[in-house]
Image 1 (cartoon, rainbow, N blue to C red):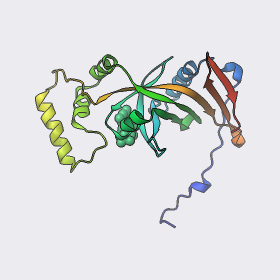
Image 2 (tube, helix red, strand yellow):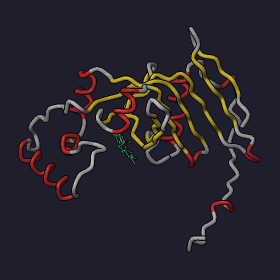
Image 3 (tube, rainbow, N blue to C red):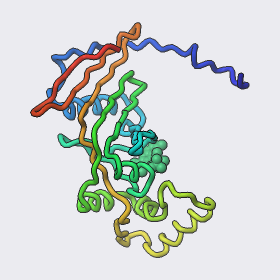
Length: 217
Ligand SMILES: Cc1cc2nc3c(=O)[nH]c(=O)nc-3n(C[C@H](O)[C@H](O)[C@H](O)COP(=O)(O)O)c2cc1C
């Protein structure tokens, strides 16, 4: 035993919410996602665009981390990262990816599987320029997922960049940094209910359009 008194086995919430009827769903999962994303924001879920991204090496060793969704449309979900990071390197060798939006305060989650590919450099540049100056410098300062000797070293790199590109000066887009678009193959919408009789509605891509099926909770 550890010295903590908090026992997760005793934690049990009863979820109370409307049943998700098949007839209420959009025919396309990205449209359904847009509705739920709006509802999560309306319910003041903290950072509803925070999603867990799972990748794997070609021999199937998985890893997960949180990233922020920055764009979505009928083509899929886009996030930005360093292509040389662990996730970036794994995706370059194995494009299979899973996303999870954990909207606990409204007892919902959206789980996506699909494949990821880099977006165009023009699209990346457009988004990079919309970021605050400090975040632009940060993308240069950090060789994401590599070992660094100390916090001081990171701060020093940042200070050097801030001197080279003062506020107001255009920061070039780091070549290793950019967007990844996740093209979904399956999207599952999960809504928690009482007695663990949750709704699970899964969209699966077909030759044209999407198949929608209900799964047991
Ligand atoms: C709330 C939150 C948002 C994050 N957003 C991003 C993001 O948009 N892009 C990113 O590269 N890392 C983001 N991170 C950091 C990642 O979780 C991770 O530490 C980093 O991308 C390196 O991951 P990797 O070594 O597995 O590639 C975020 C972390 C948190 C907690």
